[in-house]
Image (cartoon, rainbow, N blue to C red):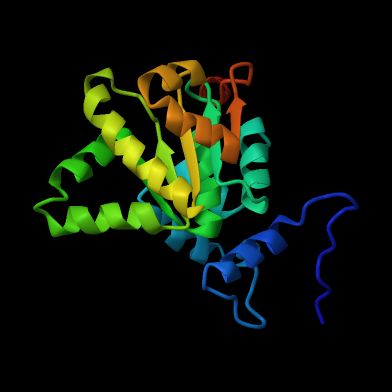
Length: 225
């Protein structure tokens, strides 16, 4: 008989929390089901359904628990185990923002959308059934990642409306929303509605990754050495 693994004193048992969240979202784990750690294929299916594209190296690291410790990942794990509805990861490229969110999507399920794609879905939802269904999924899913928010200045006007409607709907329903951006929070406050971001701060947290190591640069350096 296999003994259940015990969490260290004071540590958060993330797997237990994730099982609880999955049960709350209407997908209880059957008795005797293997853990996510023992069955990476189930995580792979969740990651594929999410729509988030990752380099093969990053995907394998998530599926086989080879992610290195980062502030972004630590905060995302705490968010997954907690009760907040919103997490914003803000910082330059290469700080592990998207990779940390991919870990959560692989373990909990959910969807990923970028700002430009959200604008396209919003524009075509009125006449295209597929776009409308995708937009409905983004509004109703228990977990959504809005990746690379405010990346394109050319889309500012249209993106503002789409982001407002999505975030406002999800906050009102108490759904979990992760946002990554290379922009500073003050820039987002000016670009989008202050009403929405005031609610975001009230229902979650913002994590600044400005001083964190550049993981992409470190990876390139390792490959060259």
